[in-house]
Length: 88
Image (tube, rainbow, N blue to C red; front, side, top):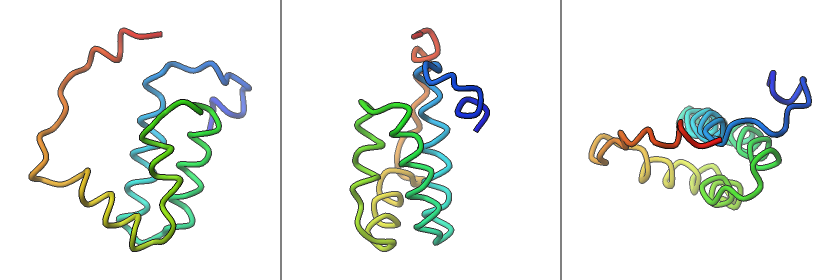
């Protein structure tokens, strides 16, 4: 939100994870409209991000929940590669 208010659209590339995480959490809570809003706001700032594009294209709450459960679950190995923090 601060990035948007300040007009700093050139934020660091890893900021995109905030929008993905927020939208995913909202989808898991059953608030599909808020999840779509978070993902769409992220996509407006990071239009090339493939993960956000996939999520914005989800057509229903059920579809979103299923997708998020597939990509974020305890059986999935946690990505511990933090080299993205070095990218501008």
